[in-house]
Picture 1: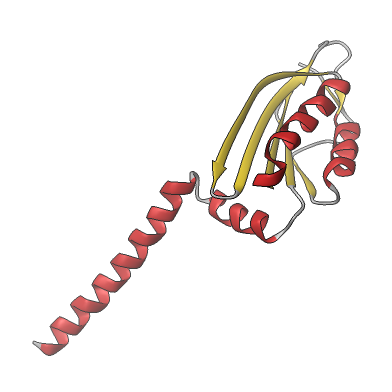
Picture 2 (picture 1 turned 90 degrees about the vertical axis):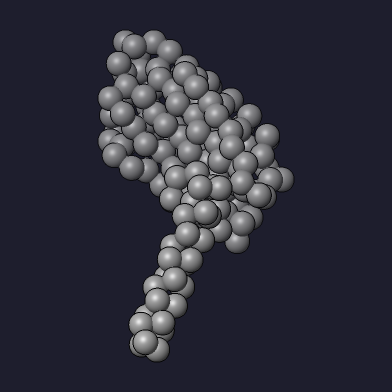
Length: 143
């Protein structure tokens, strides 16, 4: 009987831990955001991830609350200077961390825009914490 009670208590502890983790994930959005929020709070510099689709670029910026609005504005200005048309921009806050997502495409389909130049300028804007996923750097993106 004692063994049964002990195993039940252990099972309940594991369940409580899983529920705590689920609660954290629910409050912060997708599971990866919990880790990103902790990383952003531990560092003063914003973190940027650039992903490409067929004819779009998606830029995700994670920064502290102090750089919240200015960072979004600076990234949008940079993209427009490079010939991008902003399709959508969203902003979410979790505690002292802000998450910006910007989706853009080339203003002119024939001309496109140079993704490597966007990446280079983004690095200058936020420092070296800029990474690229699925992006051919020497290729111009056009629909």
